[in-house]
Image 1 (cartoon, rainbow, N blue to C red):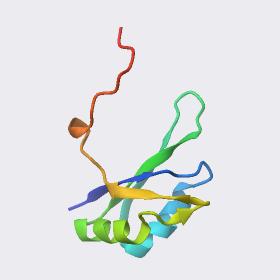
Image 2 (image 1 turned 120 degrees about the vertical axis):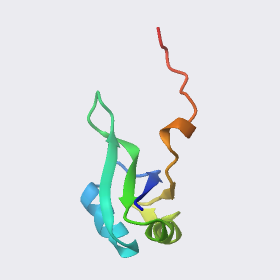
Image 3 (image 1 turned 90 degrees about the vertical axis):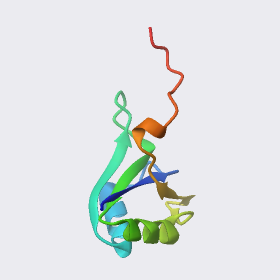
Image 4 (image 1 turned 135 degrees about the vertical axis):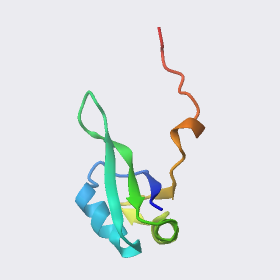
Length: 93
């Protein structure tokens, strides 16, 4: 079963290709998604990588959580389903 990882504390210089090359060491990657700011088009500093199995996702966490990429320690953990995340305090009028 595919497992989605949250990748945080990324440098703006990090690219999808770079992350794909790095995380391939842990196994097969189904998808890489960098989250971009809608207004500026620049990276927000986090993204998601979908690994082909839970075992590969756990291996990626062990290999890359706190590993430096562009002088910043990555934060790698299992992504939480959308319904488990707290609602942001936006201005909903």
